[in-house]
Length: 139
Image (tube, rainbow, N blue to C red):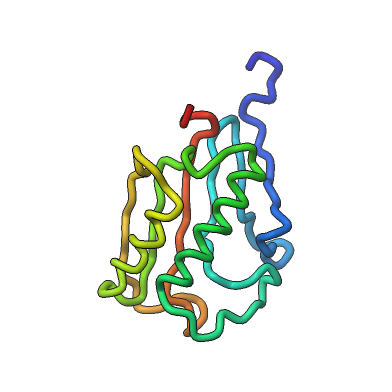
């Protein structure tokens, strides 16, 4: 774009995704047509929400739903995601994450990296996912 706004950074919000404490980070930023989504966890819409004793599959489903809400708020779709990074506290639960992932993505799937980590910010968290995408690349 020649009007100088092509690379303007804009923050994206969704009523379905709780916002972090003020002055800390952004959940979703769009620069030009590039989308960056911060590490999402299964916490509820009220950022301090309790996840109970949900398993890795349920947490991954909740996370991918939050990412979907943010992509839609950015005027995109899950098909516009090009990369996801998964942080998992027990590598043996990767099949559960993959199962959830298949419920939200279609071919061609985004590239993906999965790490086992010793812990996440809260003890009940088993999964965290961040994502990158390009608006409009899916169609």
